[in-house]
Amino acid sequence: MVSYVYILLCADKSYYTGVTANLEQRLFQHESGYFKDCYTFKRRPLQLVFYCEFSDITMAISKEKQIKKWSRVKKEALIQGDFEELPNLAKKHF
Image (cartoon, rainbow, N blue to C red; front, side, top):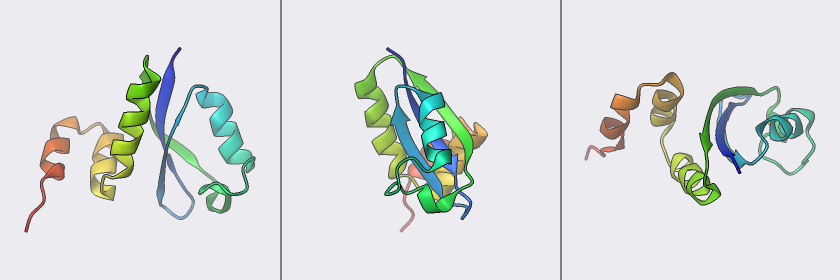
């Protein structure tokens, strides 16, 4: 079964990262406000800015958790497809 990790750009310019087995249905739920306690409920309208398919749900969940910890700059590099920048953005400068 295919799973998806996705990133939404919210109306307040924040990012929401999630995982689902049915991307189309989950996007509809976000956009319609189906879950009133969801982060995105008060931040609509939303825009899908990134998604990636996984054949293993465990791997998808792991990647979602990893991306959620990333800085805004690193998420934007992923969204823009600047994959070569990702390792540099992981380094902390003290």
